Image 1: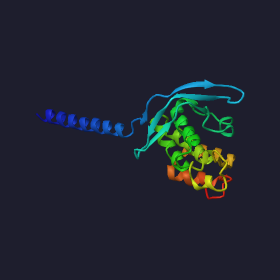
Image 2 (image 1 turned 135 degrees about the horizontal axis):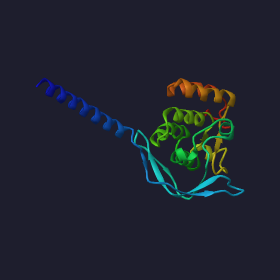
Image 3 (image 1 turned 90 degrees about the horizontal axis):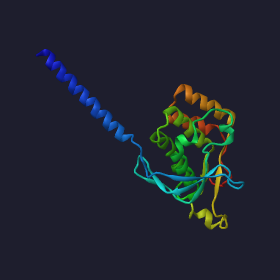
Length: 212
């Protein structure tokens, strides 16, 4: 009888673990909606690009929907040559959806660039990338990623009335950035620690007159 009670307790414990694991997996389940269809483009004008044939979405943790619109030419690289050419990295096809969503936001320029940057880490995890690799790529995007003035802002009505899109990239200290990548991969820092260290190594935030 004691054995049966113990077995019953074990069954309850196992059931609780399974339920918890199931709920936890739902919380962190993939939040991409739709399957992107792409056409690879490699011309003189657009080398190593893809054309997004079918739109798809990413739903972030706050429930906001980020859409990658169809019929846009998008670079096949999320990170710059300064990073890609000096160290081994995951294949771009390992995080293709995240790359398409992020690049689409930088071209559509409807949402603030900080908001688009901040979804990168969770999107990478939702796409199946390991945590330390997701943090590494997020750190590089934070350091050198696209920044832009949202379309329709007052900037387009005054000093930049003829500009179709105000977009630029930050300039980090790449030696420090590579050291930071090693630190991320070996020391497993938190996102807050990464943000502080990465922000400190940005040499030029951009040409815009407002604080970016």
